[in-house]
Length: 128
Image 1 (tube, rainbow, N blue to C red):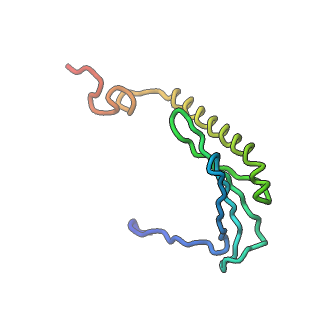
Image 2 (tube, rainbow, N blue to C red):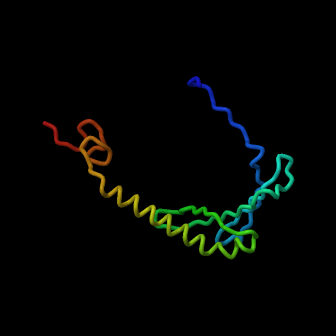
């Protein structure tokens, strides 16, 4: 592929879903993804997918959460929402803690970002 050539972007007509969104306007939302044929008719050969989303407020700001809800109906997805959002929040918090741990263990080297002058020539050092 030439440098300026864009890759071909093509929609997979055999993997289409109709998306519906449900929300309580307080805690979060649930998306129901219903499989459809290329003509827009329901495709009963594939399963409906439910996905939940919510936001976790942290000291650093809003953390969006997205998670699958293993259910066959909207009612089932609503019932599974609390446990699924809590599990997603716990995973996100653990990932943030791990990132902080890794960041704190990095060795700071003069001339690289975060030490002295942030990598600028002579930054932060006394010169004679």
